[in-house]
Image 1: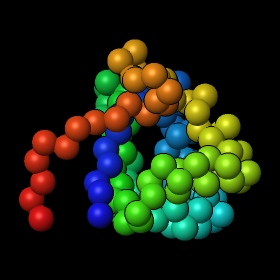
Image 2: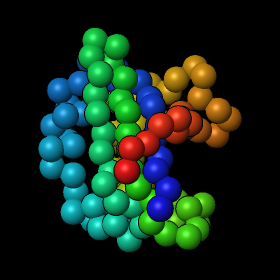
Image 3: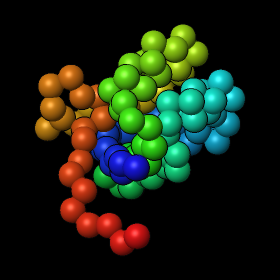
Image 4: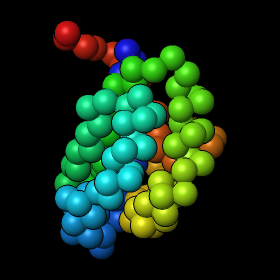
Amino acid sequence: MKRIGSLIGLRAEHIAEYKRVHAAVWPDVLKQIGSSNIRNYTIFLREPENLLFSYFEYVGDDLDGDMAKMAADPVTQEWWTVCMPMQKQLETAGEGEWWASMEEVFHQP
């Protein structure tokens, strides 16, 4: 299992809408997350900085392949067209990153 953490900004004018859509994530999006070997996927919001922190556990053996399958899924792509305009990429995100990756520095099993 691999633990993944990432960070992105949330535009202040979209906070309520972001919470609303995530209170009722589309069933096919949830199904795709599960079939991509992702477990315990959680998103936290930190206000007033308006930062989103995501955490999930990857239980497969081909992270890049599973992420590519998720990215190719039409329903997931549609979901992202709803969510991405509400988000704000961090200036420090790496090349090709939407959500900025984070280094795990501590874990208590």
